Image 1: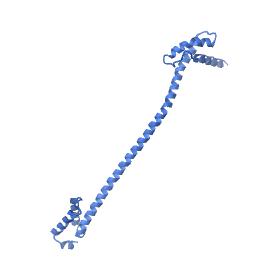
Image 2 (image 1 turned 90 degrees about the horizontal axis):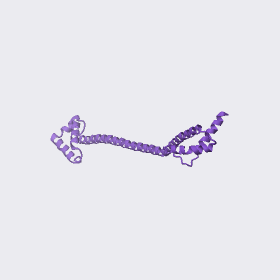
Image 3 (image 1 turned 45 degrees about the vertical axis):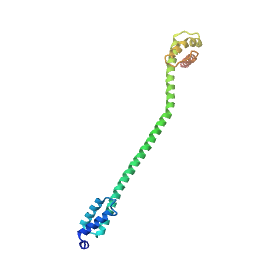
Image 4 (image 1 turned 60 degrees about the horizontal axis):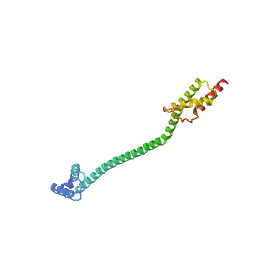
Length: 182
């Protein structure tokens, strides 16, 4: 190729190169193309017009590779954003599921709490029954009920004065005593 290049003076080759760079390459990175042409000329393996062509093609290839890397990084970022949205939706489903179960759990806990409060009142009813000498269970319940209702006002179940719970608890206690004797 030196023979072909030797037919033209360096000034002409430089003018030809500048004409090329100011033409179609003017909107591109001219300095980068110029450097690539110089590098190709040092290798001295192609005709003058091909030097410029190879320079542009190699720059376009490098830019395509860089653009591909940026696109890949952008796609990975998009996938990460999508994964974040999917995870957010999953967490919202968990929160909704938790809130859907909450009323049931509160109802169960409330029932257990109320049952525990009634157990205290039942224990006190049986204790008062055992302390007395009663003619009948209904009479015992009638006299014990006001005390149990008063005790329930201290946040132990809020029984009404008309409640029959003490009567039920005394009868259940007597029934369990009879079955224990048998």
